[in-house]
Length: 466
Image (cartoon, rainbow, N blue to C red; front, top):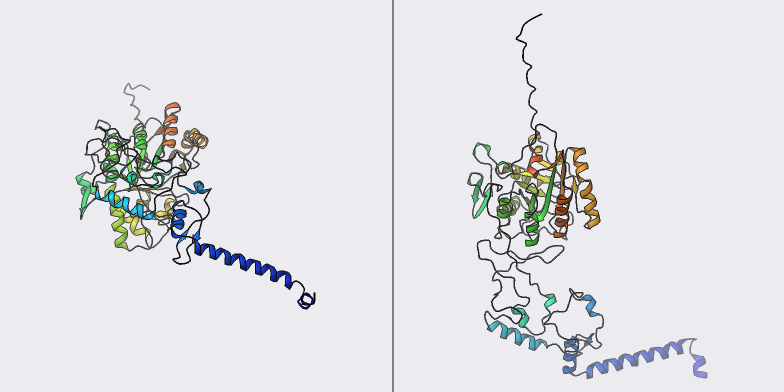
């Protein structure tokens, strides 16, 4: 009682609590130090929560993770056949290394347990991406067709490797189209093509013949009636064989904007042009969100030197030969860069190409001051699938003809997503635009309307009389 009275009020209570906490910490440290190494490895292989070896500093687990599936890639999909059962202990790091060495020693070995013996896997899969689906890779257009790759590949032979975390693109044969009376001029046309090193580039040829003239789809406006021209442009094409087949099923007046990152060996540009479609090149320009939004290895950035800009631009142009013009992305920031844009614009227009800006606030007079250059530039009017759901897309399509008739011309963009293309195909089949609205290739909207024929002179009265 005397000791308690000598201590300040509350100190005895907090002192006791502190002592108990210290004992708990010391006990935990003693338990950790006593944990055998094999138990630590076992806990780690079970992917359990954190436990630290005080001697080596190695981190492993102590309590099972129950909600780990929520963080797995593609956790909502059906489990991979090579994924381990829940109660199975996955192999240790040493076992994984041994298995990988054994797999590397066996050249050409693949797991064919799920593939029919008569269908060998494709030898040249190429990676491709799409915002909505895993896209098939492109096969070389000059090679014989190959069968789709089996679900499992050589990586599946490594024990414990989760197939959900691997990138294994499916392989599909790109559709081919034979030439016909509807086909456009073969590309590259030698009279409008030049070589720079190993690259072939479009150019203005002799007598001012240009790619915008030679590669364009022929279109003649009717003189008898006033037509309202509707140009539908499919953007960012080139990554999906399914999308390509849908585009080939559309009328030839539909214009295709193809990405320079599409497989150059797939023959897509040739197939589209053989089917009568005008092709334009998607120009990879940096946006204001760069570097979070990276335009890729061919991307044109404000901070690049002029030589670097041209080198990247030439890569894009060489991979999209046969293009009538270039399409600027909606969120690009290059056209407002005073030190970069004029040289880039002059290079493109000087090579005989047209230009379409899809930026919502960049008017033609902001892109060029010269009237001759302004005649080679247009801006897009609407985006059909800006809201990517069926109800919204159908709504925009339903009002497209009326808007075109009111304005006289309309440039409507739609992405190369299969879902959007199916809705466009259905609309064109069920409710195609009716006169005076007509579908037209994009290049037709750059040409001035044909002047009306002069009225016929009245015949003079030769009968005489008063």
